[in-house]
Length: 117
Image (cartoon, rainbow, N blue to C red; front, side, top):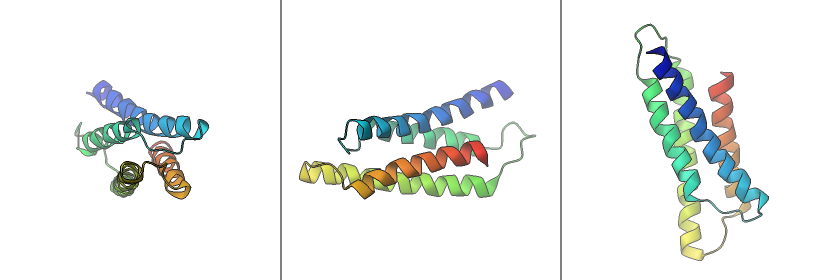
């Protein structure tokens, strides 16, 4: 059971890595657009985070403040990605840079909380 939990933790970190990696790739190319890959990374992070929030195995003590903070960050990140995608579809232009920067900062913050806290 512990191996399964470790695999879910790994997939959780991979989800953040996909989101942040896609953001870095877009920033390096100076496109400043949100992509579907960022959305998929966020989805993987959310699903695996919910799986980790379940009390399994029975001996694991859950850190509810950490879970709450990470959930709020994921919701805000999803909102920012949704706004960016909507603006791109509507205008055909890249998202404003502060909105684009927020994606990277939020993804990095979520990963940092997952590892450090």
